[in-house]
Image 1: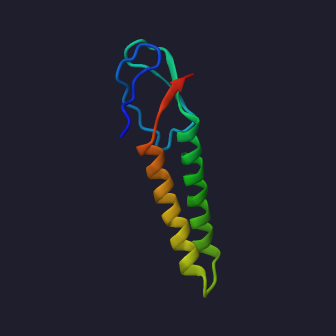
Image 2 (image 1 turned 45 degrees about the vertical axis):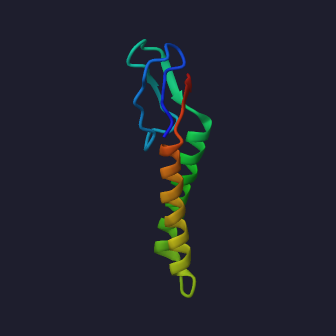
Length: 93
C-alpha cells in the first residue's frame, strides 16, 4: 500500500477515500488543503456506478442472465472500491 505523505510538508497523512471521493481535507501537520488523486476518484466513481448497476440487476434482471449480471456487477463494485483504497493517493487541493 502506498505511503501517503503531504505534498506540502511531507508529513504522514492517514486518509480513507471510501465514501469521500472528491472531498477536500486538510493535512494534520500543516493544515493545508489536500484532495485525493484523480485515479483514486475515478476508481471510486466506477465502483459506485458498479454498485448502482448491481442494484438495478438485482431488482430488474430476468433469467437466464440475472445471476451472471448481478455477480459481475457486484464483483466489479468490490474490486473497484478496493482498488480505490489500495491505490489511493493525495494531491494538493
